[in-house]
Amino acid sequence: MSLFYKIVQWMLVWPALQNIRILFYFYDSFILRFLPKPERKAGKKKVLVVFPLSLGDAVMFYGTIPYLLQMYPKEEYDVILTCHEEYRELFREQFSGIIPIDYRRASVDLRYRAAFLREMRRTYYDIAVDPVGSEKCSPNLYAMNAVCAGLKVGVLSETAQKYQCPAWLRQSVYDILFAQKKDVHKVQYYAKTWSLLGGKACRPAVAKLPVGSRMALPKKYFIVYPSASVPVKMWPVERFAEIAERIWREKNWPLVVCGREQDRLVTEKLLRLIPKKMPVCNLIAKTTVMQLLEVVGRAALVLTNDTSVYHIAVGTGRKTCVVSGGYVYDQFLDYLSNGYETEAEICIAAHKSDCMNCNNHCIKRVEGVYPCVLANTVDEVWEKVRILIAEKTKETEKD
Image (cartoon, rainbow, N blue to C red; front, top):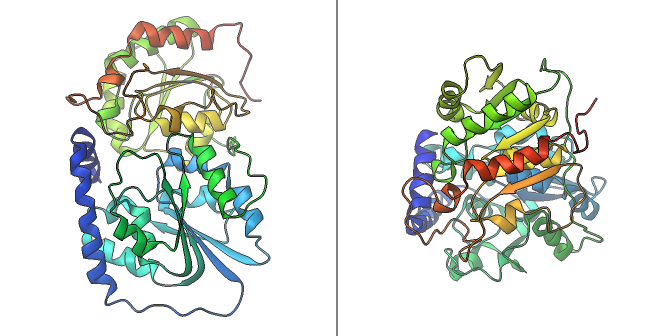
C-alpha cells in the first residue's frame, strides 16, 4: 500500500498527473470483454450503492443512510453496499449485504483489479447508485462501469472548474446524472442525492456513531493524531509535539496515539519529540475501525491533522481541533456554518485565502506540504486548543 500512497502524494503535488487515471478505462474495457453479464434473478429488487471512499467520507455518509433506506425499505429491496473492506463492520447493520473491496490495491495491482471487476459483474442489480461524483476518473466511476444494472444513477458537480472525466465516458457509464453543487458540505451533498432520487425530508444530519466501552483506556486522556492520508497534508510533527506538551502540562492528561501501520513513522517521531515523562498509550496498528471509534469517542480532547479522525470526533461528540488547509474547507471541515446539530465542540485551524476550496488542485508551489497547511503557527493552534480545554467549556466526557 506504500506505492498507492506515494502515487496519491505525487498526484496532489502535481495535479496534472491525476489525468492518467483515465487509462484504467481502457484496461477495464479489455477485461470486461471476457466477463459474462449476469442475469436478473427472481425475488426482491436489488440496489447497489457504490462508495469506495475513505473513513472520513464514510462517517459523513453514515448519517444520511436512514434516508436512503426510507426509499428502499428492506421488505422490498436488498440494498447492497460496496466499500473498502475495513469498513464492513461499520455498515453491516444498515445494509442487506456488503461487498468489501480493497480499492487502494485495485489502483496499483492489475491482477487484483481484474478480480475486482469480476466481483462487480457477479450480480445483476435493478438500480446502481453512485453518490460520490463523476467529475474524476475515480474508483466509483470504474465500479459503476463494470456493474450490470437496469438503471445507473450518478451525480455531477455543476460548479466544478474542470471535469477530469470526459463527457463521453460519463455518458457511457450512467443513465442518469443529477446536478450537484460542488462546495457544499458532504453531509448535505449525500442527503441531497437521496432527495434527487426521490427521498422525502432528507435533512442533512451529522452521524451519531456507535461508541463501545470494552477497551482498557485511561479515564481521561487526549489524542494527538499527527498523520494524514498523504504527507502533502501534514502539519509539521514538531509543532504537534509542542502543542501536546502544552496540553499535558496544562491538564496532566495522558496522551493516546492511534492509527494505521502507515501512520507509525510520523507518530513515532512525535513520541521522540515529547517529554519522556509524559504518559503515553500507544495504539498504533492495534485497533479495528470500530475500536478506533471507541478510542476517539471516549477522549477528552482530539487534536488531529487527519479529517477522518476529525469526522469521527464530531460524530461522537468530542472536543476537537483539526489543523488543516483550505483545500476542501467547505466540503469537509465547516460543520459550523451549516448549523448541524452535534454535541461536539469544534475548532478549525485553517487560514482562509483567495484559493480556498481548490479541491487539491493547488495553484502554489508545493514542496512536500501544502502552503496553506504550513501557514498555521503553533501559537494560533494552541489558542484554539486552549479554548477547548479551558474549565469554562462544558464537560463532554461520557460516562
